Image 1: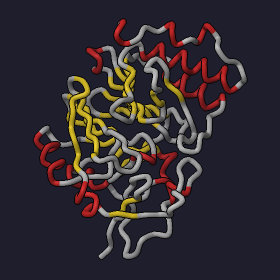
Image 2: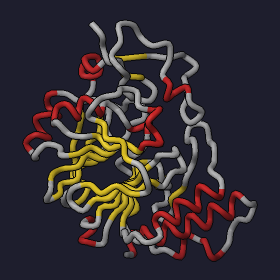
Image 3: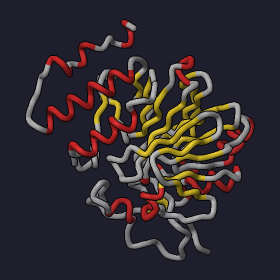
Image 4: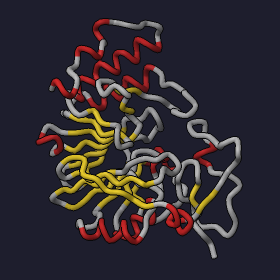
Length: 287
């Protein structure tokens, strides 16, 4: 019987097949990698044997969903609870009965939005379970590993979702890479959900940008300037990246603006400019 196998490296579920594919197209792309040990696959049943999803409140109305122990890229999707229904931002690979029961008790999922191909996870399992559409930018159509009628390809710069939520195509990491703006977050001051399209640094007063994280490929000036231009008019106090620890808790708009300037200086060989010193932004404890 055809089985939708899951890549152990990137965690993306593939189209059902009788025999394992020769390789994962997402991992064969220059932004990802195939380990020296070679391509490996698992199934949802196999993943359920030793893994579970954990849930934790990130802020009021925002719930994180993370798989333990660590699997593949290890991203932490987010469930936004809006007055128009719940929106799932990105997916992980594990979808089991317990996850279904917990999310159903919270009102289910009205829509799923994917930031970029690496975080597709088992999005079609989630979509079928909750009869929810999956929003993916059309520029990333070729990277959909499990095509399905649930997918809604959107185009252009922005896409409005229920509950006053907006997807913004900033590009960079992938041509179709998107971030999500949620105006009701942070007590009405707004937040960006960015996965690693905009990556939160170890110092939460800094963010950065790469074409490939495992292969250390940078982005050029044009891509960085587009990110800045697409977000110039968007108000936000916080940034939520793709992992539990990846949070800019305050002053996120200033963090982004200074980080863009610092990045542009760095790729042109200028370092240490006082104008882009993250020390100008208060630490979270000082806020």
